[in-house]
Every structure is written in structure tokens, then in C-alpha cells.
Image 1 (tube, rainbow, N blue to C red):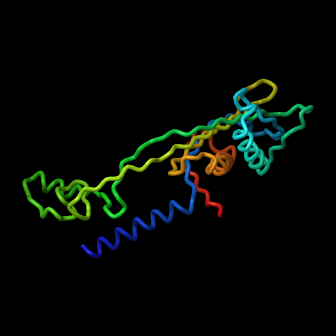
Image 2 (cartoon, rainbow, N blue to C red):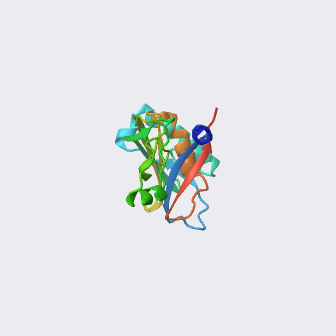
Length: 209
């Protein structure tokens, strides 16, 4: 029992350490990006609600920075670009019920099978009744709030309006403010651009200190 508890603490600590060192997101890419597309001049297209939004303009600057790292060039006001790029974002609240870090829940089908055959087990067994088990008598739950931060970047042909790429990024974080995560969301969206059409992948970025 003592060795198992020690292993559990080490395992959970490793998970928490890993989560604290990287930013993880899910990136979905749908595109009809021409293989011979060389022109990457662009303008940023704003919606009416974004036009006078200081928060949006801050994120727009981060978008410009990341686009520049991928060979895109923003044109002057009086020039005609090849592309127009738009960005939308939002945050949704989700509540997930989890056990306390010192009471990890696991499941073992072997013990469930034996319980169904009428066997009885010691009430403090870590495999008690074949269901979730907890290190102790009290079943102590806590509710932790997670926030789902989402970003969508659209790239279209400036002349005919044809959509060339639609990139969606989502990441579940404890922090409520999307401003803390926006640089990572934008960087994740454009990583390995344009990527494989019709795929969703996990992207991990090291956290900046």
C-alpha cells in the first residue's frame, strides 16, 4: 500500500509538471491552398465589432507577428493584396468534477468480474468492488472550473473571396482570461502552415517565461 501511494504521488506530480511546462491545443485545418501559391501579401479584414475594439487590435498585432514568421507580408493601404485574413475568438466555461490530487481514481475490470461472482473484498482495498477506488474511507470530490479558449483564422483570396484556409484552435485551461493564451493559440494555428487538409492534431508549445 505504501509503495503504491508513493507511486501515485510521483505519477500525479509528473502530470502536473508536464502540464505546467507546455501549452497544449487541438488544431483543425481545412484548406484548398494552391500548391503553386507564392503570393502571400495580405490585409487583415475586421468585422464592424472589431474595428474599434482595443482587445482585438492587440491580438491582431500578435497575428501579424506570426504571419510574418511564415512568409506573409502585409501591404500598404493603397496596394492590392493577394489575400485577406480574418480572426475570431471566444471563451466558454465548462465544469469538470474531479477527485482531489491525493485520491486518484482508477478502474480495474478484473475486480469487477470477481465482484459479479459474489466475492467480497476488504472495504479499504484499493480495488474496492472493482469500480473507482480512493486511498481512504471518505470520497472527497472537488469541482474545478476549466475554460475552453477558441480561435479561428480564415484566409481568403482577395480578388474573388474564395476561402483558402480555415484554421480552428481550442485549448482548455484553468485561466479565464484568453489574453494570457492568445499568443499560443495564434502560434499553434500557424504551426506547419498550411498542414494536411481535413486533419485535427495536438500541438504542444513550450511556455515562455
